[in-house]
Structure formats: C-alpha cells, structure tokens
Image (cartoon, rainbow, N blue to C red):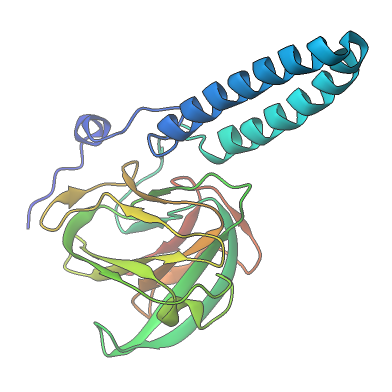
Amino acid sequence: MHIGYTMGERIKKLKKIRIHREGTSELLYGAIAIIAICTGLWYGLHALSPLASHIIMPFVCGILAAVWLIALNFYRCPIRYFNGDTERTVVAPADGKIVVIEEVEENDYFHDKRLMISIFMSPWNVHANWFPIDGRVKFVNHKNGNYHKAWLPKASEENEHADIMIETPEGENILVRQIAGALARRIVTYAKADEDCYIDQHLGFIKLGSRVDVFLPLNSKVCVTMDQPTTGDQTVIAKLRF
C-alpha cells in the first residue's frame, strides 16, 4: 500500500473552518431567534412600562446571549497542524482527558487483546475529532446502542458508537471508536472506506460530551498518563513499535 505523506497532500484534505460546519445553521438560527425574542419583548414591555423594559431587558438578553456563547464555544473548531514526525505516531483524536489506559479483549474485529486508550470529552471541550494516524480507512461501521455515561467502562461496547478501522502503511490495524454519551445523541463520521486518511484531517464530530477510544497493538509505547489533558491532533498518545 502506498500512501503519500507530503505536507501538501495533508493540507489539501484539511477542513479550514473556525466554527464547525455541524453548528453553523444552529448558531445562525439561534442568533435570529434571540434577536426576534429580544425585539418582541422590548416592544411589549416598553408599551406596558418603559422603566420595566430597561430593568428586565438587560437581564433576559444577557441570559440568551450567554446561552448562545456557550453554543459558540461548543462548536468552535481550531485549525491545527501537527508539527512532529507522523511515522508510527498516534495523536489524540479529540480534546479532553485520558480516562482509560488498559489491555482489553476486543472481540468484534481483532478477537484478541488490544491496548485501549480512551479520551473523555466534556461539554466544554472542542468536539471535532481528528484521525489519530496516517493510513487508509478499511471500513466504517455504525452501531446503535444505549446512552450510558461516556466514562463508564461499559460505554465502549454498549453505547451507540461508530467504528473506524485504519490500516497503517506498515500493515497495522488501528481501531478508532466514536462513542455517544448520556447527553450526546448524534455521532457524525466523515471517514469513508478505502480513502487515505491523515493526521490533521477531521474524522468526525460528536455533539455534547462523549468519548473516543483508540485500540492499538499491545506492544505500542504509551506516551500519556491517566487524567492527562489532551489536545486533539497535537498530543502524542502512543508510538507504534517498529
């Protein structure tokens, strides 16, 4: 399998957006709704009592603006470039913190033990997901399921999730799992089977708090610790052995 690794090829695949496309319509409609509500409320209150409109309006509009800013923060999508050597490097697919580093029995695809590294994404984190390694997507599977709290061990297998299998240029298979949480109800996956994928490229998006698992060969060198904060596309979480 031949995969190019030039910076030019990676840059061509980048989605250069500051606000994630998953949130543009919601933010736009939300802003329009807030303007309409505040305008209608102001005219209504002003007709009843000009003094009341000046007291109540700043409070109401402030709350609505704060809600909109929280949504804006949730949908932010910083442009990032990984500056290190990408060969056999596994980077964090998401912002968040490390909640699992352990050997697990993976029986859906590998039918053997794998090293699983899991990142929990709070509602305050960036929710864009990046490919953790250069390679080729072998397949993408979506499975319906429950909505347990994302940090629970059973969430990886029982919750709704999307599985993306990536084959590295050296022939190693890496599984990335996007997991819906107790709040998250929508997993978006951009990965397509038989397409090349690169570090710096968006893999998908998960709305609200959730989790991303990465299943690696047992002999992989772990580069993170439990509860360590991660930055998607920046933090090196593991190195594959030669």
